[in-house]
Length: 258
Image 1 (tube, one colour):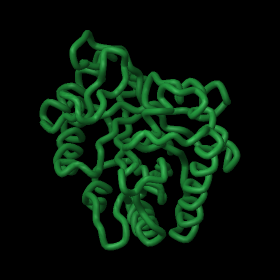
Image 2: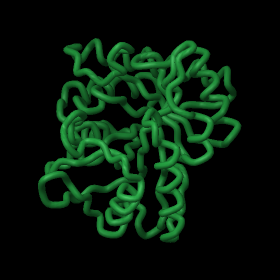
Image 3: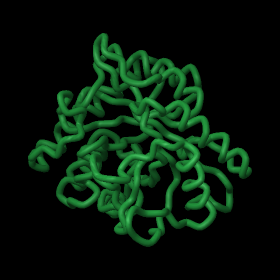
């Protein structure tokens, strides 16, 4: 953990993932717990009204907000790997991020960082060309925008090499492979539903820097933020339990960007 000496960590969640009358997750409750919100911006979910409502709730609670662009795939919730070439990835990341920035201006707040969603994040974790496309889009919009990347991935390194402000995240509710990647959804150990087990695993990582893995030895990971997926049915209970566990160890929860 990068901020171990300061005993501070961010808690983030993917929010604003409804669409029209369809509601996904309890954004209001999550915004009472987390310190950063990754807000969907039209690719895998959301629309202008959903963006505005979520951004407004975040502003009212003083929550740092980031754009959460994805493959343009509402049918698959952005979790399908689609064969978009890098140039198209660059354009749809720019379009989605720009849309959220515009709605944020109407809501009286601002977007501070970008965190890719779902399959796009997973592809960018290992595919340099896709990672570079995302970084180009972010830098073209605003070089002051930070990037929140999965710890230990290609996107993290590419963004750092490009001179971006880069922060790393750890997942509370996802299993890790011995190589440090997320276990693909649908495979055993991919999701962690037991909030007690999730909190214990995170505390072990915070103290040692080592993350338990599925089927192998622990892997060393650094991180500035912990993510709890907002669409999980147990998300609010999970996030609250993690925050209580962190406080119990004297660890302050605060935004990675202030």
